[in-house]
Amino acid sequence: MLKKVLIANRGEIAVRIIRACRAMGIKTVAVYSTADKQALHVYLADEAVCIGPAPARDSYLNTTAVLSAALGTGADAIHPGYGFLSENATFAKLCKDNGIIFIGPSASVIDKMGNKSQARRTMMDAGVPVVPGCREAFHNADEALHAARNIEWPIMIKASSGGGGKGMRISETPDDFVEQFNIAQRESVNAFGDNTMYLERAIIEPRHVEIQIIADNHGNVVAMGERDCSVQRNHQKMIEECPSPILDDETRQHMMHDAIVAAKTVGYTSAGTIEFLLDANKNYYFMEMNTRVQVEHCVTESVTHQDIVREMLCIAAGEKLSFTQDDIRLDGCGIECRINAEIPEKGFLPSPGVISQMHLPGGNGVRVDTAAYDGFTISPYYDSLIAKIIVQGRNRKEAIAKMRTALEEMVVVGVSTNLDFQYSILGNETFCTGGADTSFIEKFLNGEV
Image (cartoon, rainbow, N blue to C red; front, side, top):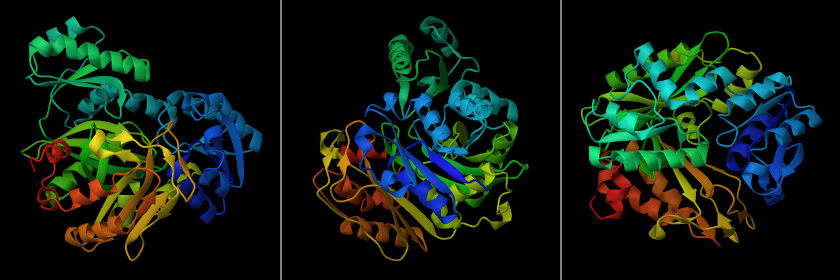
């Protein structure tokens, strides 16, 4: 068993990992920037090390500082959470080179699946359905345009190193292709330092459905059902639920099978997510793999009654999965709402500041993951997430009702939030009848649904 784990992250996910470690008797080390000196994860960990100033590049993305903290405190493992260094193959390799366990897949797997164009080719070779497009990657707009003429327009231009909606543009016709390619490429260079792009046919108004998988070092791979993440803005998820209201059991089983094939093909270990797009005919296509724990892992935990973070820790210690595929049953319906400090009516402009007062919801089937508290400062340097509310009901109707009650009960004073916006979505007929696709938020804002 692991003895001491350093959490290379902040916010609610750092708190989540610390709690899992403490329940297992594992000592924890928090790292923090100067802006996070009074953060909750700093108080909860057994030890805490300041790793630099507020900007993430100088602290949470500073591999030397993080590794020095781990070595200096005698940590035998690092859990990266999500974001920051979680999908950094170089960091995973540095951990191994320094005798520290990286709680996640190997550096080679992160590298293979982190490059979106390479991952696409790997899935094609494995027989997993992918969106029609080009097999090769491109660095030049004119070469890409020549290849694009073999794909049906509209075309999605994507950064090979992309994520979070960065480096993505749609070309509607050949006339706008070069302009859109160059814009997407500049975004990719600025965000990821990579000018490698790839092309896919754009799936118009798809559903975004992902499969949670988990795998140990003994060849066991389990698919833990799906999450529907279609309610999103600018490719950033807002509401996630399991099961997806659009999937029938046959499609679900096929998607879970292909997710397992994908994981086994690359020799995946730890928790990960295979993301798919579904078109209007319910044909599904591999989009990408997230080689880390997801923000919305709690939704899967709520309906499977399994602890994903605990399993990640056990897998890192060399243990086998504590459950098999036969143990996975989706119990009722789980829904998660991400509560952010932002102003929806101003284009979701971030709203940093001090939370002067906060009241969190509770009750049967209600879970709140947060690192915020009265007097906590929402920093302009990081993500504006305040809390995740997760509810579990016997069915989708009950889960929606529970979530509306939880949103009514939550109070945040001092910063603007998306609480009212989320509440209005939960009362929308299109959402309530399971008809929300990835265009829902835009249509909702325009009064079209």
